[in-house]
Image (tube, rainbow, N blue to C red):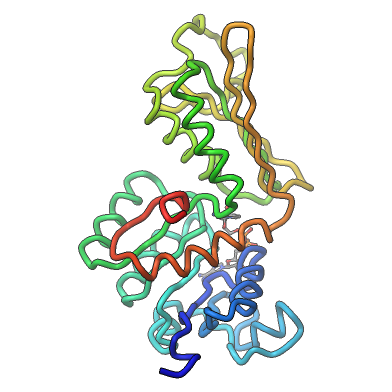
Amino acid sequence: MSESSQKIKVAVSGACGKMGQEVIKAVNEDSNLELVAAIDVCNLGKDIGEIVENKSCGVNISDNLKESVKNSKAQAVVDFTTPDLVYKHTKEIIECGARPVIGTTGLSEAKLDEIKDLANSKKIGTLIAPNFAIGAVLMMMFAQKAAEYMDNAEIIETHHNKKKDAPSGTAIKTAQMMSEAQKKFGKDNCAETETLKGSRGGLTESNIHIHSVRLPGFVAHQEVIFGGKGQALTIRHDSFDRTSFMPGVVHALKEIMKKEEFVYGLEKLL
Ligand SMILES: NC(=O)c1ccc[n+]([C@@H]2O[C@H](COP(=O)([O-])OP(=O)(O)OC[C@H]3O[C@@H](n4cnc5c(N)ncnc54)[C@H](O)[C@@H]3O)[C@@H](O)[C@H]2O)c1
């Protein structure tokens, strides 16, 4: 087999976006990955290498996901688009026989279940990862551990002000992992009245309050605060720029090729 035929053929959906552009650079830099398609609705027909790195890479931007994946014989497709597209895109990628590596957030639990069933029935390794930063994944794992011992916890997540969904996928996933360790948080809180609606944030089934902050200048940040008698524990992670997500994306592309089932969360591939 030639060297290029051993590389994993990768397509990037949302290629011109903030995350997509970083993924294009990361794929082009990795000797085991080969960029074969770039999908976006802007810069149609242009060479994605020219857009991202000012040098041609021979892959032109198309707006047709299914056609691009099929024609390029992509084996894995990274998607960083928008919450309203991610469900459709993930299904289309699976139906084309390629492995989805999904970073786009905003999927409901019901949609996640549908994707899980489709991926498992077709035996196509499918990763949905609310956060590709290894440090953020560790934050979630540490928060899950702390939740075994501390009964009161709240989450504050901060993102840039162009983020469309709230709370973040990371906050939801963190709360889910903590809820595996503890079913009900804040049981000793008193009855509350909100004089300003929403002041206490969003509430999960396990009674974790999630507060979403949206401000320019930030990228992706989260604090999980545990309170106990006479003490507090804060677990914090900061993504200062989007390169923080790339080692996770590259790792996921390689690991998902070994899978034939649905995987939710990068921690399952570490
Ligand atoms: N999982 C993670 O680690 C992680 C990290 C950062 C951001 N995100 C999520 O990734 C998503 C994208 O974030 P971003 O900051 O790059 O957004 P962005 O707005 O910069 O990029 C989105 C891109 O999708 C493109 N697009 C729109 N319609 C399309 C279509 N039909 N087909 C293909 N492309 C299309 C847009 O033109 C744009 O280039 C968001 O949901 C964000 O929350 C996830």
